[in-house]
Image (cartoon, rainbow, N blue to C red):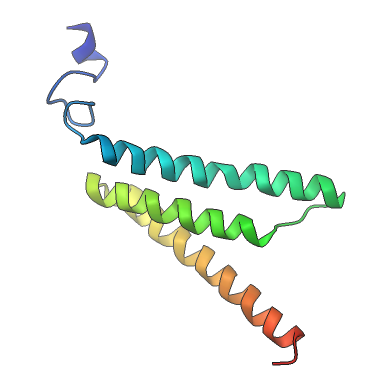
Amino acid sequence: MLAELAGLGEGVDGGPGSTPWYWWVIGFGGQIIFSSRFFVQWIASERAKQSVVPISFWWLSISGGLLSLCYAVYRMDPVFIMGQVTGTMIYARNLALIRQTRRKAAGG
């Protein structure tokens, strides 16, 4: 009974018994990758002695966001889906702007 109240019982939506293990890996993997971007940004800023956002921040953002989006679609959670779609578009746009700036700087 205590396990069911905690949401851990078999057949409880979101419980370990109702979600295949690989979706847990995808969901947690996305969150770990997404969260790691903050450590990358922090370390880069400390090294530069100023606030910087390295390109790896955006790659981690889009990778973690897409994995989280896959999990959100599996869960059919419209709030989570909307947040991940919006974020992923912003991360992709930042990567496109970085590429555009680098091309201009290279003379192309």
